[in-house]
Image 1: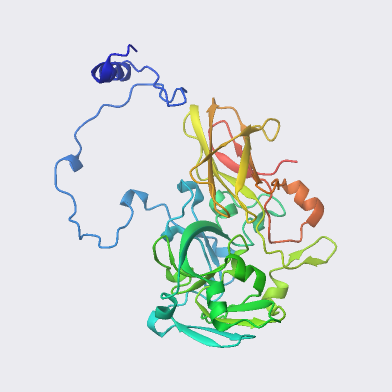
Image 2 (image 1 turned 180 degrees about the horizontal axis):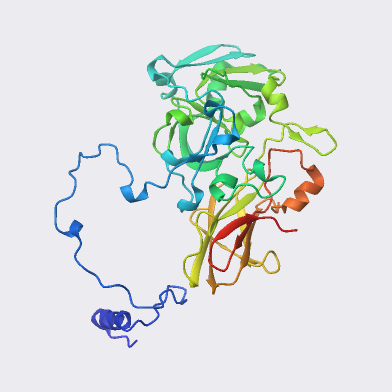
Length: 419
């Protein structure tokens, strides 16, 4: 196309569209192979739209009504002690909208009046304290992006391919910006005694959910949060107050936080000692495996997002690590015979989801798609086979093995295992 200024560019572009000529993306790769459909006047072009107060709290378009959290009804005996999954295949970027962040509850969602809510700090402290929500908001605050992943994310896949969709295999993860008070400020206010080593945060739900957190981690980067993505926490995310433990398993991020007891040893509840341990092949178990290791998932294409077009396509996915930043993500389309380095797009932040892309050509040939994350510590995401050789098949938690999607000739995609 001759370079004749803006008018010439527009004329040449329209000519190319009319003739069905291939258009090129910024990478120079063809993205259209036929003429676009005719543009016509639609109904919505002819009348006034909704007024500014029609939806005082904005909602998505009615055409996006399918983009929702989903659950697996048979997964637990009670829906009050269950989980919903983030629709990873419908999202882009690295931030999860508040209304799509996965849920995990032990006795249902607690609905709390914020003016009546209190946070107590007691135990091995010089000055036991009780804070109101207004008290907490008077402390210096921080804003921090962080991913939150349940230790059971991908847990159903330990014994083989089970759930056909990345929403269900990997959807117990989200990433938002939290606003709140660094926990160390509250502990300093209370005066932690020299023999203190552990904290026990406790929730205000009817389960009285509690966990053991090392004091060292609490002083490093834990936050007592009351906002996410700029607005108040949602009830299902712990409103009005929750603990944020960046990079560590989600069961420690106690919601509806009402008490933090300081002690010199970890607390042992029945659930903590029996449920949140990693069972090994020989019958022994790993305890205190808090850090979420490097992990990744291709979200598109995937079983809920099959390939629809031959020719140029864009692969998309997410990677994260509880040990720091993602350094690189490799992608294979042939089951590991050949690997290509994906583009990390957007900010690459510490202990956050990181978006990656890879353009590729598809002409209807079957593909075996995988992604492999590498974090800044040099840790390389393992295959499921490598994990099983070390930990066997008895585990439920901390499955960060490489996921495989089989793209068939018609573009449909399924969850498979390869050796």
